[in-house]
Length: 186
Ligand SMILES: [Zn+2]
Ligand SMILES: [Zn+2]
Image (tube, rainbow, N blue to C red; front, side):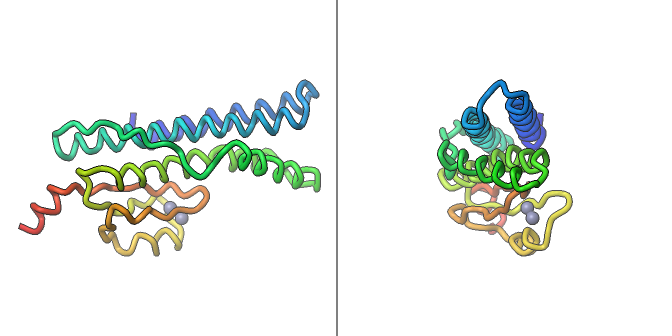
């Protein structure tokens, strides 16, 4: 299963779990505070899975490119913690109470967080890996103007340049290994 497919599965199941928690809250079986806590915990867990997936995928990709094994680096998800996610869910609930549709917004929240966590973890892995020289931004099938700008006509970015992304951005890294650079310049 490809990185993209596995990541989609994590996003879909997180979404289903968060919507189920919302349904249970709607039935009055859990309190609002419990819903907020549960939704945030589900998303936090998904971010952890997404980061581990990115780490594993990078190691598989490096094996494919170099023929050498590169152990996963143990990259952890960054940027999100339980309190921050809870604040995010609470903001959605405030908007809901103001009359906004919540399902679509919960879905965006539950699916975008692991996507961003995966990209950040991949960036971190790329930065830490001694086999990687840099990467090219691989745009998704329907890139927006911002992502095209960040792509810069396919330039090779140095590995410590963290790939920028926005909410819902499905761009990925195409890694360039150290050996590859050497053989190109030869
Ligand atoms: Zn974009
Ligand atoms: Zn993008």
